[in-house]
Image (tube, rainbow, N blue to C red; front, side):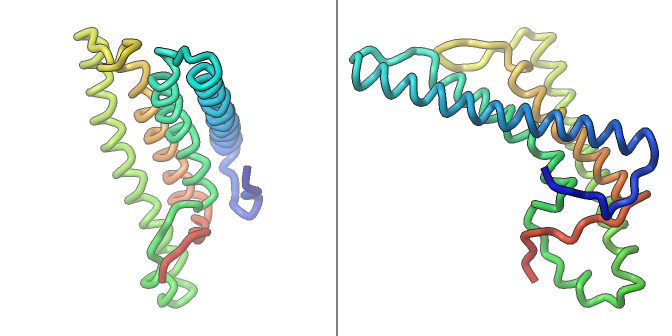
Length: 175
């Protein structure tokens, strides 16, 4: 996890959001560890026992989707995403913070819109009992709900950066 103590915290909202983001990042890390274990089991079963698993590939894909979107809020919080900062870096210092806050609020809106679309898909998948098209079928909403979650929590982080905290300059910026 990244130390973001340089950012101001708006009371209970900030503390709860930080706890949620940290728990999500831990879960994402555990998911990646589970993927390593599943791949190891698959390799051992396939090449040493000549008995490949029927479930490993499907669960690796499901876990990877969950891990990516569980880690998304931490990447948002730490500014770990790729950003083109050429224009904001050219602004005078007094306007730079305002531009970053505006961009964070735009990011919030985009994430909220995408989360809304994703939630509609989750609801449709649940109501229509849609299953994955994999060897081991699972309800699609159980996989795609992580997309909605990651987008929604990232939107909350963008909101915090836009209203209360200085958004981090992206750690991986182009410009």
